[in-house]
Image (cartoon, rainbow, N blue to C red; front, side):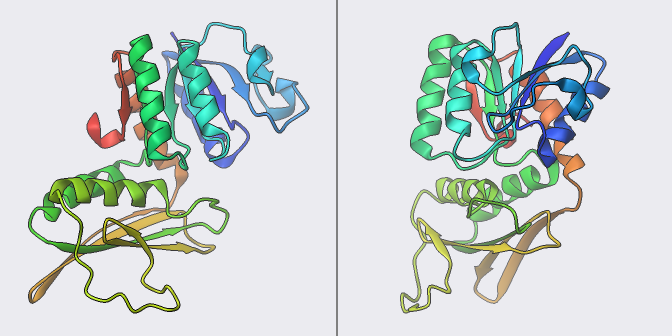
Length: 257
């Protein structure tokens, strides 16, 4: 039985994670964590009385196999570091960490020979979109990314968009040339090695992204749309089964599917 703790358990994604764990025959929800709460009674959140609720990292003192994190960008690094230091396999769906932070966590996981994953997106359609974009990047020298998320999403660009740009850049092995630098209103979006990223934050969206490649006389658009957060749990569940058998920290779900 895989013993699981969910960080950010009372958020929209945390609730989906709890449902996924409770519906799995070989997983057990043993704890939940959120430093912003004061009520530690599991019944108040509709949870089994055996589930322990924590609001301080230092008070988590039980056997846990997997740490699922859907917390906040400001807390995710320390949460992941704590999990690795305590031999808990991290499954991190919270975006907002810098490349330096993820590299630090990878080194820490290596010293512990501990498997885990940090994924910008656990939706299979989004991950496949990224893989297809990597292939297309080898044939098109110019591309832009448009990502659309719900109005409450804190960080921008999204981790998925940034990861897409990163992998496109790696596939090309060079910066994308810029045809025009005149943009006093900054309408050309963010810039990752020349790849422009445009972030929309509007009600009505959950998580959508499209990558547009342009060539002489043609364009290629690769897009995906998420209409229900439930879809992310397929990837989370798949990741859990994979990383408990690994001895290193994976960056991106596309690395294990």
